[in-house]
Length: 336
Image (cartoon, rainbow, N blue to C red; front, top):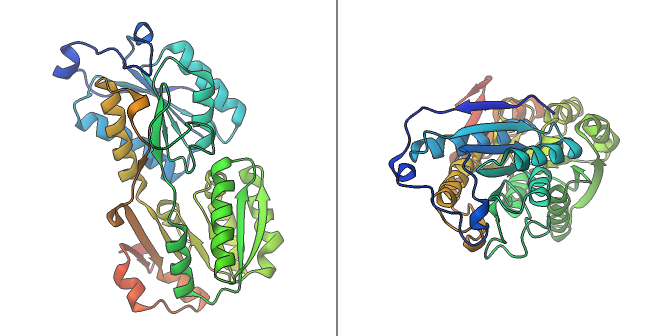
């Protein structure tokens, strides 16, 4: 487990907190309310999108006046047993609220903690992951936000950029959100008459070899919001570029360093800010069980990235209509 990092933001105590710490509502037993001002945040792995969610949560809470909070920031480094250890640490430490960024860390928190509020963030399918029975409300001490990605829109984008008859997809077979997204991608491909070629991985070290195993058979590769794969995205894009295969991604943040032709997805910093507002509501006394899952559905919540350097290297001409809709364009190594 990575060493605990606790960050303190200021010393002033917001007036609403000075007025008295409200007991956590019905989803959390009143006598279990923690006196701690520590927010525990556990993410499954460090990569730009999840880092942005984490920072967005912290910034939103600070801007809302929660300047006395401390943050115990933990990274499970892709290891499920480490995620469980972090969850038990938060339980033992009696953090005021625990946030699980991505499915495995959220599951670990929900499995370990039943008397402290737990907020999941960036979980594609919270019902399928067993976190809550319905997205219409929370459950007990648990609620959160979903980053269910616009797969159809991503496939529309892909078909505007390349003639794809066979699509490759690498995903983590042990991560429930990755499996759910693979199912969506497979269905979208079948509906469009596109052959779908899959390769699964257990951890990020297998991403390169998995990509190599299918690269000779595909016209493009689709990358979902799969934390295991995204954390090793450079390995995947190196193989793809060496073989002249375009990569379409659901994560614009991780696509910025290069190698990805196009990405359509959430601005994860905005996603973190929205999740931070949910956390603030709970800190102010809202019952997690009454809060439905947060979905960011407005077009303004999505970013479109086009990398013209990659397009030039692959000999792909990007339609002007696509460029006109792009919120980020990379050209000559510079983000426009």
